[in-house]
Image (cartoon, rainbow, N blue to C red; front, top):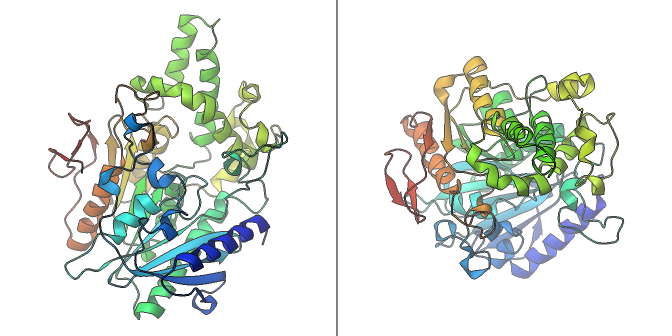
Length: 473
């Protein structure tokens, strides 16, 4: 084990479960090979409406869905607030320092959803977005999906920076500090999670899942893409929600964010000519970002592009320059003349773990046209092209969401989106899961790849199948 603070957090989690569970927490180490600190709690409700679960789900419980900012507070949209109680069992534990959570409803429909958590988020970071949705999606007999997720093993530490203060962004900045933390570990942990969930279902329900769906969000999308490419025999279909595409010799997160950082330095320079600023805008829009998304770039330039670049570049091309994680929000000059494609060590490091596009099972990617962190042409359409080249294109769909950004929490923000330019992706992600299940289990092909327009009203969304507007709620 290489992170004792994470083990401390696991103790806190277990104590919390003891306080709120409907039955005592008990050890289940024999259920899951290679795991430790494995515990189970019996709940009357497995959704985030249960404080024992909801209170552990971070601010994402409200903060990653579209918000009504008129009250000045984060509001959880009605369309993803559970209205039913789902009793069942929650099993949590660790593979080394990787925290996992498995939920098994009392009434099970024989299906499993395995999730790659977003960003460097905790195992519970997708609870409100995915777990609640699949747990409350009951069939005629009241059965719903089992759910499994892990934090991928690279959480980072809540430690103060040199000024003695604690910053909420610190764990993401130091997530790769330990030599054992890496993208490669993510893939190992996701495989362990899949095996563990299957073992739990075999022992608790006396059968393996008839269908296993994987669902990745952002960084988690890379993991689920990799899993589907390498082990299609384990999975029935995939939802790829704004997944990161890693390629060594082609545009990737590091190369594209290098461009964005340099472009932003020009755009915010008061002395830069209009021609220079226009050229800088073009440096970003060449990656397929809707030019109208430029209102988002001050936020991304100030808080997202440089630190995200630093986290990954430091891990995979460490010889350029060494920075401590608390410096990741500064020193854009490090990248003024940086060319990823001339960095042979970095390129070779990524080639070892890159995506291939060898998809042979039904897969749906959902991505926003205004995604200003994971640029569409780098991560979405580039992956579509990889599938066309190396996989079965008939099994793949790409749904671009017009005016969709990487973060649904920006939708309607009074400072970031005062004109309600953005629309959320979450309604289409949920729709896509239903479409995927219908495709896999009934043989009804998903609608062809398309760009979903912005609806005429804030309380509307488009029906992907019919192309007509429908009530979001």
